[in-house]
Length: 528
Image (cartoon, rainbow, N blue to C red; front, side, top):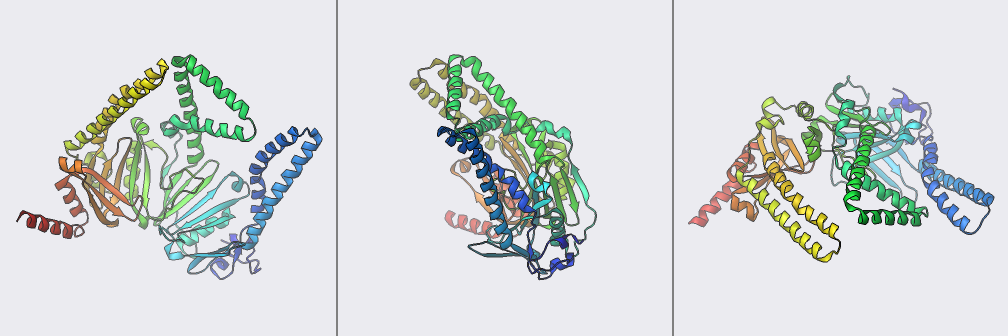
């Protein structure tokens, strides 16, 4: 437990142990992060070198001069990045006191941020391949206060040992001691078969081509990219019946491969375990990620089933909790995800274990109460209106576009949308359901993404009753449970008016009754 001793505190105290961490001394970030910055600067060097080579060759510079100029530019870029990081190291200090975690940073504008230790709700450790190479980790400490300026504090980076020690001290007390963790789930590589059942399979290749086109354009290959695009378009217009299916198949194949690789990188070494009073998630093949959250801040769980994944029998489990924060600017991952795509039965068992629900209040479909048939009528009506709009658009395109093959493909859209839209409407109606367990309000809805939510009733802070014009005609309404966790509200959609109000009244006794009494009094007065 003396892993922090090798970092020199700003007060020049040396040789201190971990017990020094909870004192008043200020600590600097590790100097080895300079090497990580130097390696990362290569990402700036490469495009700069391409641009410089293009510019100098256009001026008819000799090869030796071009090489020398590129070498000098590379040295300047790396030196600039390292110098900038060195200044940040000298101006960034942090400390952990008995009450707070504090951070001082900034050069032109100095900042002093702090987080009370008793408000820490989750600690996120993340290390990309470059940081792992040098034994470093980025630490994010969150409080769960959504709108507060100090809801998150980032130490970028700490050594891996120090980051783990800080995590234990913030979540388990000053001694950092913790009992052995109990495993809840570990990765099975057979789950990778669910990876292609995602939007990546449909859109992945198009996104890759877009990025590649932009990159080639930036390094001066605009003529090449335009020539390739023109040749592909000529092929499509000349042989559309052959070209379009082949392009769609190639897009799906590349997208599926990308989805498999993304699954392997994101969820490799996955392990979900329960520490005393906390859940810890660890994953990542190249970029190591670790998230620890307090179970007392857990307000429920969600089983998410996107359409393709649901058709393949898979699902994902997400946490409904305060203090998770949001993904960073360059991150596309769902910070609330507790599992990779996995079999639906495994997801249901794991969600039940995490939420501590009983068999009668679990997240299984068998306990849910179905919604009125009027809910199906609304969805079928919306599907028919959508197909009508698509048909009108196809008529307009057929009148404006001279190419016959385009007209054929345009009319294929409403032709396919009609049976698919009706099937989706029926599936959406079948997905609707709700139940009330001993601890949880359970609701399910959605067709393209079916979501089954078990929300802790003690975390419900209010109700929102929504009744549109068309819902009133069918005797339906939407009941939304407001909570400080997750999305902020969870809906029981298109439930019968009496059933919805009764559900809300029983879920949190005493919260909705005053409103219902005033509503009943107002209705009686109107009748008189």
